[in-house]
Amino acid sequence: MGTHSRPKGRQVRGTAVPRGRERTGYRVVGRVWIEKDGEAYLGWGRVVLLERIREYGSILAASKSMEMGYRHAWKLVEDMNRLAPRPLVHREAGGASGGGTQLTAEGERAIADFWKTVEGFGRWLDGAQATRSPGRRRGAR
Image (cartoon, rainbow, N blue to C red):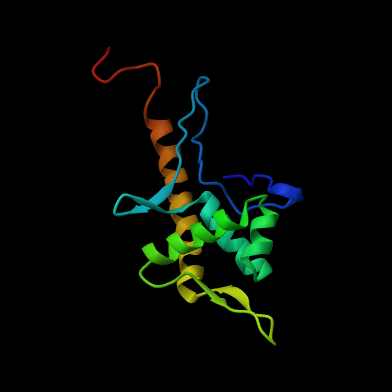
């Protein structure tokens, strides 16, 4: 599980597209996302958005750092908050203190759980790759 480049030279912790070990030119590749009631809840882009919100304290700054429109980022945050058992992101309106956006404990937990799931899936892919020869069908001799 290597790191992938983020826009503007930043690095992410992982990727939601784990790849198994390559054998004879074939490699098992998979994508990871989590759904709730058939709706996308968490995936690589959403988790990176949450990490950027943590880093910048702002949905606007986080969306700019990902070259994503603010409205799209805000919609993703609304969807994640709606689908989560408890909100992942808390936003305070501006004013004398300037407001801001921060992750909740649930948001921090969601990020950690997602990356653990991705790592486990990557290990599973490695095992699946090692036990099955790509050019051989089950029952073939």
